[in-house]
Every structure is written in structure tokens, then in C-alpha cells.
Image 1: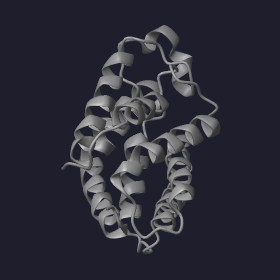
Image 2: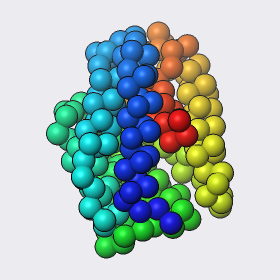
Image 3: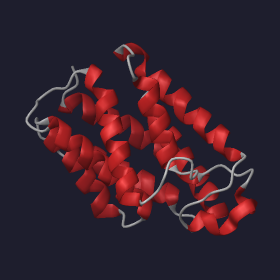
Image 4: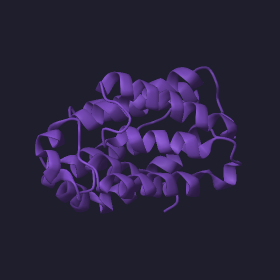
Length: 197
């Protein structure tokens, strides 16, 4: 079972891992956007890791969403917060969740992020990575979930490298975005890698 203490431990790992990826993510974002994605991600998870999470898992996930909202007004930060809020609604009132619930939580987060971001799957955004992870986790035992999520996120980065961006600031680069990794997809990969670091 996964409780708030386990979530806090995971946040600490993600915060450390994404802090180390700040320059990489800013560089990837600078090629297609304003170059601050690494700061958004690292500050968001550092703030979340420092939060005092309540025992209620739903309220803990809501606190993580609030942490992102406090330190980031960027579109990526808003999407991350939206995903955590959607998962929070599914988990409210429980002091622990079963790992078998995780695919449904990721799916709820993905759907909320699609609605909030007005994006579509295939636009070469973080939404594609979330979808790949949601599908990869279906039917898995807990022990294999992190590795499956990392593989799915990594495969998404490579699959979409050869496609143009169709959403956000990056869409303005059109065909010039072909061959470049999507910063949001790369950030998601670094986030899920943090679960194992």
C-alpha cells in the first residue's frame, strides 16, 4: 500500500533527480520555448518535497498540486498541478492506496491535463507521455510499474523526436521542431526516472 510517507519519500527522490536535470531541461526548452522548464520542474518538486503532507492521500496529492501552483505560473506547472488535482479527487478520504489503483490515477491525470491544456494526443507534448505511461501500467504488478513507466516515457521521447510540435509555443517552429525532443516529454521522463533514483 502507498501512504503519504511513501509519497513524501518519492517526492524527495524526484526533487533530487530533477534538480540534476535542470540545465538539460532548460536547454531543451530553449530550443523550442522560453528556456525555463528545468527551473519550473525542479522548483515545483522541491516545493512539494518540502511540504508537510497530510495522512489523507487525496489531500496529500492536493498539497503537491498547490506546491506547484505556488512556485510556477507556467503552462507546464499548471498541467502538473492539474494532474495531481485529478488524482487527488480519486484518492480523497483514503490513508493508503493500492498500487493497483495507480493506472486509474494516471489515466485520470492524463484526461484532466488534456482537458485543461486543450491539447490532443499526437501533438508532441507531455500528454503523449502520460498516455503511454497510463497504457503501459495496465495490469502490471507493483514491482514492475516504475520500470514500465520509464520505458514508456523514454520511448515516447524518441518516437516523437522525428515529428513536428503541434501545440504551444513550440508549434511556431513547425518543421524545424522535427529532430528535437519535446521538452515536456523529456521532463516527464526525468520525473519518472526520479522514482527509481
